[in-house]
Length: 112
Length: 114
Image 1 (cartoon, chains in turn orange, blue):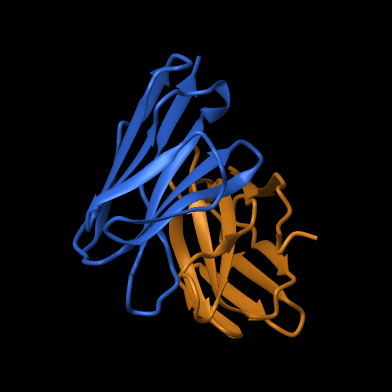
Image 2: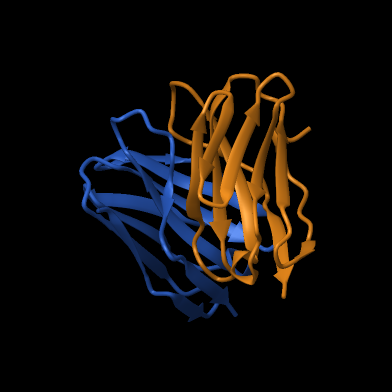
């Protein structure tokens, strides 16, 4: 079992839909949770960063962490064609090295 | 604000030729630096990371090496490229001492070995 599991998709939705992107993980020591957006042929861009459990909102984006279920989500409201990209989750433990474990990414397509 | 640069953006090299990819970070001191390779459908593979000048840790045995000659400069090298070295190479940095675990990525170098 991989430490971080993420469905590669593609996930195709109409413009304006609410998108839910998810990752599951097996290491209960993970405390830091991140979401990156990667456009084709570009480097990943940090979208959201949360520590431990709970929700965090930034504009149309909401990150949610459920440590009891070892499950994290990224919600995108009012999705736009410009949101079409690959979304990677990443997580790391508290202490030790600064190296996160990444999911393989979910490809999202928002069609007009 | 912090900025990370990588060059070149694209590189086509013959098998057996040498490689040098450079990454520099601006606007921060003592960053942790990382080299990743991203192959289609295989996610991010960590190749090297560095917590300081001259300090390099290798995650996987391979045909590549890394060096950190200055605090904000990270170089990925190879003496002889293999076909399997083709891929998208990403440099990243994270704050060295603040305890924040986020990484920030550069624009990447697309390498094609023929």
